[in-house]
Length: 544
Image (cartoon, rainbow, N blue to C red; front, side, top):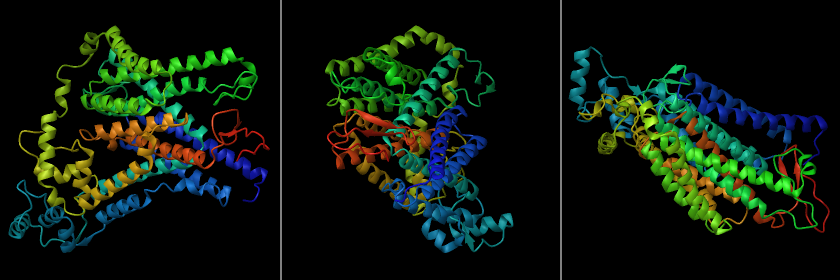
């Protein structure tokens, strides 16, 4: 690789700074903008991600050959590309017989000019009679698979945005320092969101931020729905726990007597010279207490949100987290201490706040405004019964409200805009092919990144790999009873964490190829946020 000029190096540093603080801004913006569920907030998020992708592309061009090409390859490109191709097919007008073969229910709705009847797909004679009565004339020769093309295009843009976030994190965050920095930012933002949610609930006046009237009585924190708040927080909770263990584990890797201590990461270069060993150790224990307090507050806010699905998912994923960390945590008393102290302290905090006080702030009948578990079961059964009508390509991505309306069972809500199960809904909207592609992509990602992360860790960075894998698993479990992956902030964070898991996996693979990279004294390259080991008995290698 040819040596870069001074101007090119400066441009690369500027690109890195824009990517770094752009991602930080989006991490903070997406939950604060009411969970990014409104058109203006989704547009700003999409604009921000698209801008960062252009900066990342410019950086890659400036870096030249070998300048981060691996960052764009994750192993899930082909199922993602095929799924996007399927969605594109849904908005292209196709001959009516072809649409009838691919998606019978969609073809019937187009032929009748109205939505299909509650009993199923109409017969050709019924279609002709309905069109004659309404004066609609002959059905069009070419129709799209999607019953709501505009909504399908919007959902495709959102999907591309999440894919962009995933690749940004996987590529730019490949340096261990960058990934850890973003993970700390995520924990800090989650802690502040949880703190704000509790304070707002204690002083609830029916308005989010005490200013804007909540469209639903089940709002919690900056989120319109408490289930969405729970989905957001449950992804961050394992990160806070892992951060606390990480800070304790760092104590075991301090330099031996007579050696210079390793530099404190994410600190200014002069910090190490200003602190002696005792001050540095005290600072690390202070950070550990802050991380543990963040985990306690996140857990308390999750309980206080009242989301049963979120709490159950968090409990199951926490068991998975401690099972995966068990062989790594030393001493054992610390492991058991956190297992017992975390829920106990959260319970004490809730008791100190006062459950009765919180109940008094919740409007009477608020929980009746959301779908009960029984109603969701009825909807899921109805979706499963009519899945054959979705065919190979479905009714169109994002068209659930339009396409499911004729099938709404009596005794439930008049219209359902979501299936309250992300996986059933995606099969309904994209058919058997879409469901198979999603399952294949998830399987490839799980085998390549989730399972290796959950194995017995050998390095301090693996604590974060485990935490990310558990956080992603928690939201996947929650999505079986809700639609968190369709919420802007939650989908953004899910994609960001998935990308950071890929980045940390690459760091682990690099350590496996270069066993000399491990705990010990290190140099910190501030221009690229890379940590370079000081290799013994050989000339020091320059930071790349």
